[in-house]
Image (cartoon, rainbow, N blue to C red):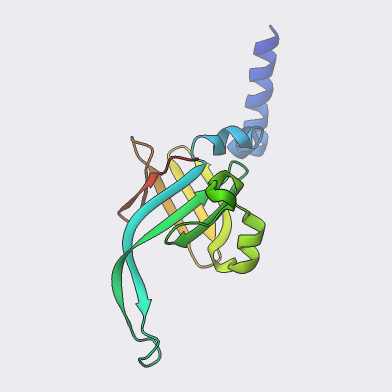
Length: 145
């Protein structure tokens, strides 16, 4: 009887406030399935400091997205820096102050992960092996220390 009331209450909330009210009850669960470090190989622009403005070349490089269990996100190139090399200790606030264009938040809706940063909004699909597909590039989950 009690679980029937709970389900009824959730249905009423969903009808009155939309599906967001139901998913907003447990954000930790929504983020937990995708939180982590995702690393991919992509083309990155390497500026030429001795050339004219905007000169440089595109080279193969590493790009990463770090998604925290609380919905924070950060993106960068090469590898992220964290105290003692432990990515679980990554300081999102310090990273945001140093490079606000690469900081932001993310949201999860089913298999779709939307990462909103200062310079871009990336919409990713969660693949069967846990990878994020962003603009055709697979970003694979990295093992956390």
